Length: 145
Image (cartoon, rainbow, N blue to C red; front, side, top):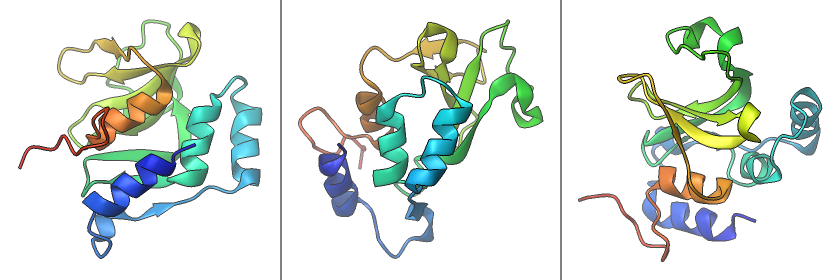
């Protein structure tokens, strides 16, 4: 599912930089996640199995190996969920969280730490990850030099 993205990361990342290390989740680990979070999107599970959990693009973003509900983790207590069930899957190393709004059918969102707003992604989960990678629609690097 993520062949093009894997190739992109091979081109733009320094393989010797430890900040680009990711761990692929096994089928059993992903099965456990899907059992715990019913309806977990296959695009997300495929990302964990094909690209892996960890940081990418020299700490451009981080995807966690174990997602967690925002309101159940004290590390995320700063974000007021207002009763919405957010499954936090990662962060951008700048204080913002990447999550799924479970109540909106696992809609990918950015939870902004400054304005305390939810920004819904208008597109697929795959395009959500491509945006984090700074990978343009045409496959070119969108990172500014």
